[in-house]
Image (cartoon, rainbow, N blue to C red; front, side):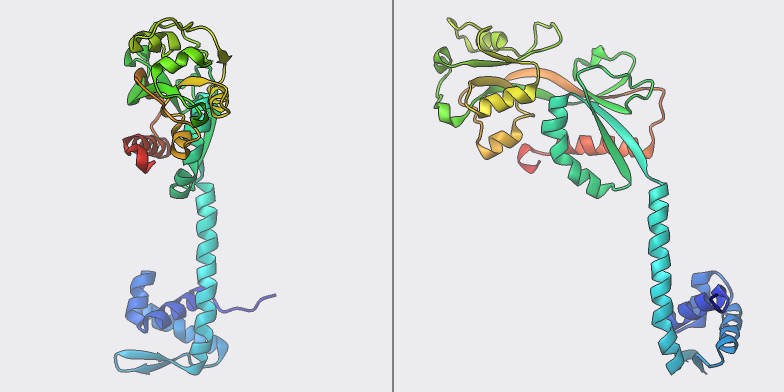
Length: 299
């Protein structure tokens, strides 16, 4: 069984010794200097030795006080660290963000480490799905969706960026000009929505003014990441989102051999209007805004 003086006397001594002042110790502990003096005398009586030399307007540690101070300081620091850690743990919260599997894998995942470093108390859950999740009911707190703002009349929709699409291919293919597509394999990503504005090869070829190319022929993938991998492997030319091939373009495993670039859909950050905007959700929103506000070479 531990035989220790009252904790208040130990706290009073440690604060007074650290500040070399009963007055400043009293201010830190929100008591009077008289109370500090009384608690230290109680501690000295309990251990049977003086801990301070009382001088005019000054207190100086005795040799015994010098021995006791670092032990108490280390102990109180350890208490503070442990309690702070438990407090942070109890305040942890989860924010669920929905995005397409390709966007989650190619854009969000590479950036999560920086967010986790800035906000370690927020557990960010990525819900990667092509399904339209119900943010009003709380299946997800936030969602990233492509479309027009009018597509979300019952949600709070904030435009983040307009996606851009261009042909991308392995530099090993040696493509130089749009007419080279006549001898190349086209790589397609399936679009679940039937919209004439979809950034398809048919749409691109029309804008580029190229004819004599079958816009339906080639390799087709239901997952955009597989289309990227096929292009990196040199299996053909993909018409792809510039957002999702940033890493490949930076490392030159893919290049944009020629234009034009065409507009895709606007990427929106959406949330349910009736669900509370908590500080953690607002933090995730702010992080996403900041990432899209940065220039491409800064990302």
